[in-house]
Image (cartoon, rainbow, N blue to C red):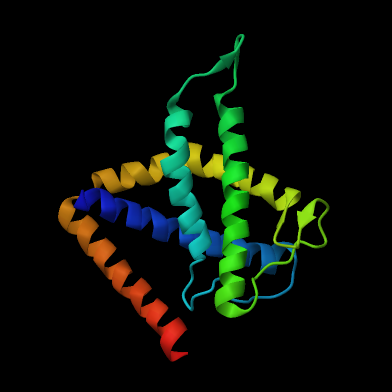
Length: 178
């Protein structure tokens, strides 16, 4: 149980960092707006990506392993994609309300997109999250699982402990000191 908790914490941190890198990449390279810290915390992590990744792992791993067909056409990947779109859209909507409640606003504005709800969620980003979620579930997560499976207990617990200390320090700094 402790090992699994440490593994899932590492997944949370890895996907939080990847989410931060993705957001910064979009802002700097794609939109050319310049750099800004895209996370709520001081460090290089977007917690919503880590939370979303864990929710996807827990909720869609079972479906992902099934082999469902419509006639001879495999439909499991399509169902997983739809699940990712729905889950990530709900997570993003909830995150926007939490951020508005705790910080007075949220970090994105989708009003420029068609089919948006209050600028909090929109079809275009939801589809992008669906595509990213497929890359995550079918490519990245199997690699990360192999990586954590190969770690002996001491390395796993030490890595998780150091990252937990850094993450906790960031939370304290962000919400109580800054």
